[in-house]
Every structure is written in structure tokens, then in C-alpha cells.
Length: 172
Image (cartoon, rainbow, N blue to C red; front, side, top):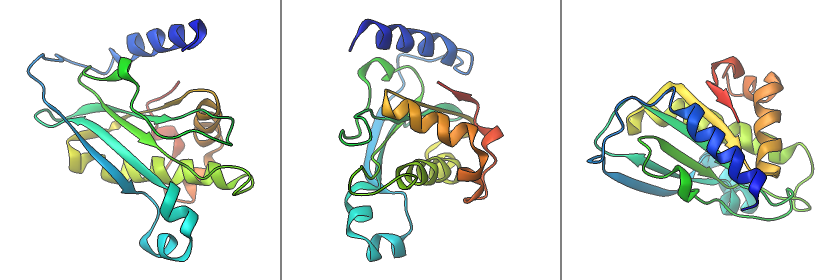
């Protein structure tokens, strides 16, 4: 991680403290892995969706109402895989790490549409895991930052999923 990424991460951690109340050391974390965020029909009809359109949720299992960070990995839209950033773990928040389809396997705006589908999935499902859908933060590194900006600033992508982009608590 380069120094500017590290600084961004520090700023992010400070900003998320606005949403975190009483993060306790006795909070237990679990991870749910490889959750498909596209529809079953889409997965059935497209091998690449079935392979790439998955997310992991790292969340506090004994706490409710927490902030959730949706994290898009970098890789220039041509590579990379979902991961949970170590610096974000054990801060009383959930982290959703997202894989999306990559270029040249798909062309623009397909990977942005994947990102929007993942964000919509989180809005529609995070409460089932104990999270608060009014405290959803979207973030990412490099290409993930690009996806964060596109999904958060061009409302059309989330409107396709009946989600108002203004409901995102923070874009980082």
C-alpha cells in the first residue's frame, strides 16, 4: 500500500467514526463468502456472472445497527479480486468486498452496472445481517474508487435497482 492510499485509509477510518458508536472489544466477527449479488437467472444465463459477481461480508455477529463499507478492489478494471482490507477489520463495522466482471471480458459500462447491482444488494440485504441501511459507505482503491464515483454520482446506475444514490451515507 503506497503512502497516499494509507493516508486515504486513515481519513476513511476517522470519518467512519462519525457512524460508529461504542465499538467494543467483545464484538465477534464472522464472514459470509461468495454471495451471488446478481439474480439467479442472470447467473444461470452467463458463466462470467456466475464466476465473478460475488461478494463477501465481514460483519459483527453480536451487534446491530452498524455501518457497512462496500469495498471495491483496484486493478485497472482488468484484474484484481475481492478482499477485506485489514485496516478496516474489527472497527465495529461491516465490510462488503465485491468482485465484478473485468475488461476485456466485458466492456464499459458492464462493470459499473455490476458495482451498482452489488450496492443495491447491500441496501436490500444488510439489515438481515444486523446492519443499518442508512449507514452504507461506498469506497474502493484505484479502479474501485472509479466504480465508487460512478455508482454514487451517476444516479442512473442505482435507479435501475430502485435505489436512490442519495441514500449512500458516504463516498470515499
